[in-house]
Image (cartoon, rainbow, N blue to C red):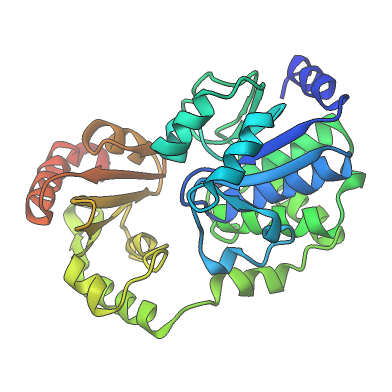
Length: 339
Ligand SMILES: [Mn+2]
């Protein structure tokens, strides 16, 4: 944040606020960790704060301190709406435009007159907030919340509650400190959080070692389906609705599957196509290493976007047509993919 933004936030927080903190739809570890970390911080400063998530999230994120106070907009609509109505300050975390909370909550947020503060590391932030703290070089929104606390107050306020929440988001969004966005500062902040009480081994275990037998079998199916286009440095996976049903797919089960393509020697571009018959679409996740921007690829061809090396998109065509289209795009981008 620049000095002007720091002053604006400081002035806002000089008065007691009714703050609502909002993650994106289908919140991940970084979204929930940053929201709950900020929740504990604001509460410690004497504000009335609440996290309102657009929809529910997986069990492996529900151990975080403060989780019991989170409201789910989709399920607890009346209570959540009442909080939004009386909010004097709204924080939006880990997303770059209001549409990321889903249409129902987006409409509600557009009615909000309270000032908003955005803290986010995705590209192309929209300009709805009074303060936009956006930095695409950051590993995670949790890292940004740490810096936010540092610049408007003092990190001495960070106790084990904040430390555990923020550490969880950093470990999730950095792929356990292996993605290129992991900087020396990320490690310094993580170390600081451990000193302040983050139980790092336990956090890792709670987030990552939660497989069910069905999920591992579904992973086996996904890996069998993987198509490796070595000459394009590309690997992609498809999962049909039948296959998901066969292994009693539950939301979140395919999380991380797309990354397996990148573990192949020489593969720079990995994609997973997942059929969702209920919505009538194919959901797509893109990952890359190096210069190939999956953010642009997803934006240009699949109605999506994200970061340079991690993005999402969708297709309204059938799986077969989607793959044919995708293959034609590989040809079109052969130069970039093989350079
Ligand atoms: Mn994030």
